[in-house]
Length: 84
Image (cartoon, rainbow, N blue to C red; front, side):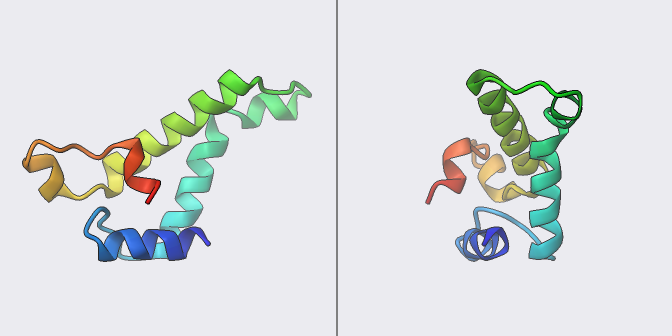
């Protein structure tokens, strides 16, 4: 599902991705990065912690895969880019 979403966004030139499956795995890993140790130690993340982890994952992902043309035009990748 993520691979297909990323393929559609790449087709719209919102993302620049060579391998959609790798990008999907990397995105999931980014989302887990902030939460993994907390969960392994038995804690339950709060809604705020989940939101922060998601935003951090999207921000980092868009820095790696966001369209450079949009950035040069003064429109840096935004969280909203993945909502359509």
